[in-house]
Length: 196
Image 1 (cartoon, rainbow, N blue to C red):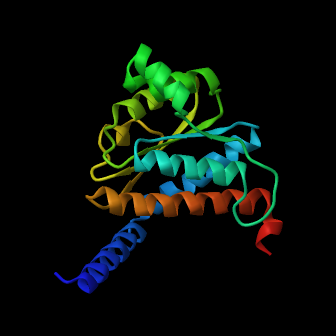
Image 2: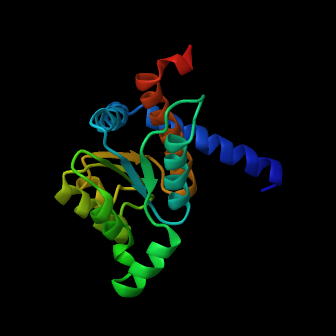
C-alpha cells in the first residue's frame, strides 16, 4: 500500500467510526447523560476527576486542563483534576502496587457528588477499575469512555460510552471528540456568553 493510500484509508476508517457512533441512539443518549452529569456536579460545587493509562492518561490530562484553563473563551475556571501526578504514582505504586495509583488519590480527594471520567480503550485496565470501585463507594458519578467490547468497565460505570472500534487509535480519536464536545456542553450551560 502506497503512502497516499494509507492516508486515505486511515481518514476513511475514522469517518466510518464517527458514522457508526452517530447511528447509535444509545450512545447519543449516554453522551447527553455525560453532559448532564458534569453540569449537575458543577451545580453542586463538585469537581470532575479523570484517569487513564498511556494515551488515555494524556486525554485525561487534556480534559482537565480544558476545564481549569479555558476552552473557547475566558471564563471562571472549573474544578477538574487528572489523577496520577508522578510523585503520587511512584509513591503509591511502590508501596501498594500500580493498580492502586488512581483509587488512592480519588479516595483522598473525591467527595459525594463529584464525577469521575474513566478512560480505557479496552475497558479492562485494573487501575481504572479500582478507581471506579472507589468512586462508587464514595457516591461519585462514573462515566466510562471505552472502546472495543467495553470490557469489565461497561457494567461498572453509571454511564458507559463505548466507541464502536477495535483499535486503540480509532477509539482514542473519538474519545478526544467526546471530551471536547462535553466541555462545550458544560460551557454553553454555565457561560452562554462565550457562544454568541
